[in-house]
Length: 154
Figure 1 (tube, one colour):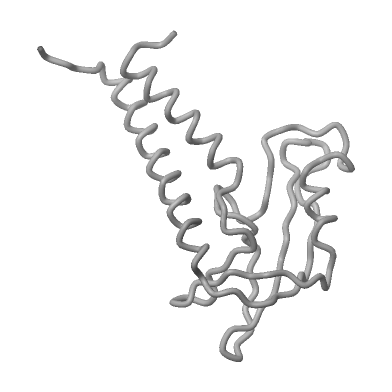
Figure 2 (tube, one colour):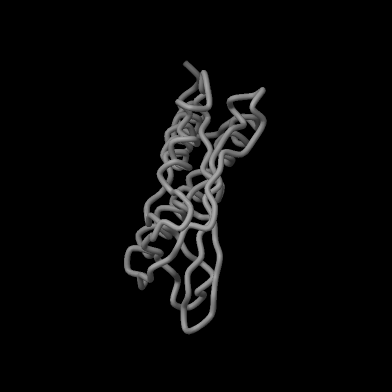
C-alpha cells in the first residue's frame, strides 16, 4: 500500500509538525525550569500595552529585577510561550476586564516575587515555570491541522 499526500497537505502537515515541535520545546523548558534555583526578585513595572482601539492587541508587560551572584538582571518573561509579554487572543470589551489589565494589577511595582533562573545563564528567568495558555492552544490547532492533512478536511 502506497501512502502519499498532495503537496498542499504536506506543507500543512509540515507546518503543524513545526508548531508541535515548538510546543514540545516550551513544555520541556517549563519542566526544566521547575528545577532551577529560586531567588527573590522585585516587580519593576507592570502595565497594559498595545492599541486600545484594538482589544486583541492589548496585553501586559511585567518587568522584574533580581540578583544572582552579586549581579543584577532584568527580565519580562512571566511564563513560557509565544511572547515574553503576556497577551491574549480573547478580545476584551474594556481594559478593566481584560486579562492583561488583571495581570498588571496582580504585579504592582515593588512587589516581591519568586524568580526561577537558569543557573547556566542567569539572565534566563521566569516567574511561573509553566507554559502559557497560548502554548496549549497552539498544540490543539497544530494537532487539528495535522489530522486534517492526513485524514482529509472535515
